[in-house]
Length: 149
Ligand code: 4BW
Image (cartoon, rainbow, N blue to C red; front, side):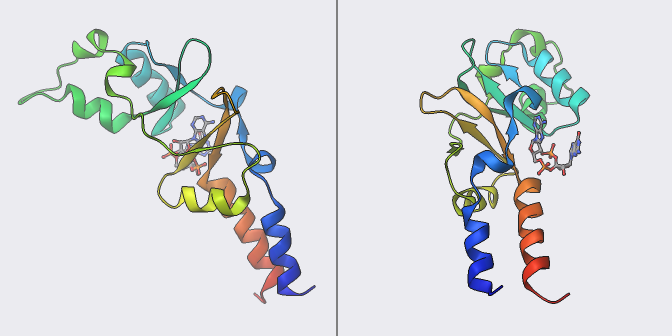
């Protein structure tokens, strides 16, 4: 098979084919206390997770680093802030988004700058995430099937 045909196969892949669906994604709600978010992050082992509103619409992402920075005082971690502040106070709002029908190439462009991209439907409801791992796995398959190794 020629490289042109292989290339076509790679670009035939859609986000829906390789995303992790919402029920398998650890997430937090925007009105959760920071304490809950930090617990989810530490227990799940992920650096960052999506943030949803009460109707399951995607509103942003939150990571461990931003929480720890937020509670860092001059001399100590002000842990009381964890129960005083909520996720919406510190979450990242301007994030790239994909839909299930976006192409592999569009997804590849996004994961250059961020370890995962949230996937939403036309109304903004959360459908899942696309990870760098999923993109790299497809690229590896393509490279192994196309080039001598
Ligand atoms: O619990 C884990 N299981 C597995 N199989 N791999 C993990 C786990 N935790 C981390 N990893 C690996 C993955 O390769 O470390 C990479 C960096 O993790 P991160 O960013 O810094 O926590 C992981 O790379 P990835 O699979 O390409 O995932 C990229 C990012 O997507 C993760 C995390 O922020 C998010 N993520 C991935 N799966 C998730 C998730 N967030 C919530 N729920 C999930 N199921």
